[in-house]
Amino acid sequence: MSFSHLDESGNPNMVDVSEKKATKRIAKAQAIVVLNDDILRHLVNNDIHTKKGSVFQTAIIAGIMGAKKTGELIPLCHSLGLENCHITIQVSTQNEVIIHCTATITAKTGVEMEALTGASIAALTIYDMCKAFSHDILIKEIKLLEKKGGKSDFVRNP
Image (cartoon, rainbow, N blue to C red):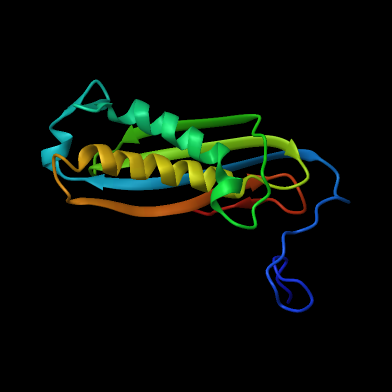
């Protein structure tokens, strides 16, 4: 098996997508942040408000901004002009904040890294904005849920 990000000499290499056809590509990622009761007691109308502002609304904006900058953050990622990035945030009964990020583009390469970056940055923003209440915050997992388009599709089984 060869790695697409290594050239024939084993050096890092950006994947050449110049011969590929542009297709519609969608990726969905999830991040989970666990907040303690001290933080969640500030939850009002499905959001937490701090002196910095609305936590979840800020996290959504930060996640979208992060997804748009993925090519600048991850060295061998292609810079993509996302056509859509949608982030949702919900609080579960287990004190978990569940973040979903869906990235969409018609391009020659996929948007998995953009969806993962969007979910990650949203999770980090929640941490940053809530740490004044408590540092007992856990970013539990970040994972790709699904990708469509390109050479192969992927769906993570629950």
